[in-house]
Image (cartoon, rainbow, N blue to C red; front, side, top):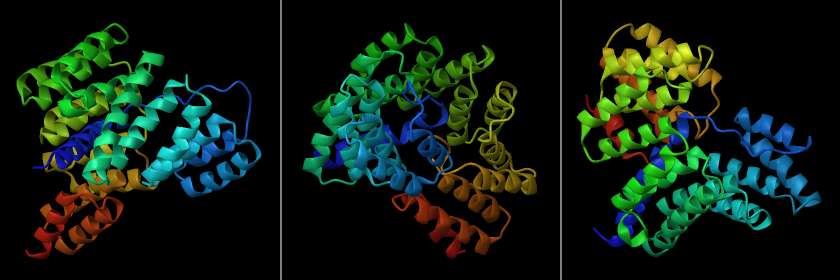
Length: 337
């Protein structure tokens, strides 16, 4: 395997997990007064990224030195998977406001995603920049928990040639523990899982769940671990705790549906949960992807022997996530049954 391909895969693995990116919600940068961004943020939260971009571009034309406008442009381009333009916009934001940790954090994410689609030489530089931007974000604001977790993931997955390394990751976990013990425990559990020390990962996750997590995002991150390990009982337990912490959180519908499919029970209710999720939660990098919801509907229908319906869902998932090879294998499997 070439060094460039290895780097791209490492960055891909890091950014795929940034999700953490995806389950925990973090507030946008504070602003002192009401601005046109109030309308833009409403469009963004509703998943209407194209409309938000139109509003932002008009605003940039009037005030090109407003870093927040470029930041939200970058966020919108990121959600539309236009990572090259996301990088350009976020670079402008960090140039205008170099001390804003959130801008550097999202620039790091955009560089990481752009690296996935780049040639080996470009991927090398983008990976290093991803590392540098995450480090800058954490240095500027150690309380930015999402940036802390993304930096740790990068260190765990990236090869040493671009700054990765287990020792550095463990050092960063220790630093995170001084800021937020729960996030540090989550990072430690993720470390165990990446090193295939699953008993220790499970022990860590159970410790967090039994200590009453501070928000639903923590529980849902744990639910994803059990989803990926096809552990229906523990996934359901994590979802139940999330529901107690935040009973009105719309993201719960996805996890409830997946847990039922893993347990192979109440398919009608599982389908209802996932359809509700798709109808009520806009597509966003900060929540379970619509492609994943479609994939699980495909699994449900495949288990029920409804192969045409399963193929339809897998095809819909591929349109949303065209780089996902697993989805293509799923579609090929049901088409040949």
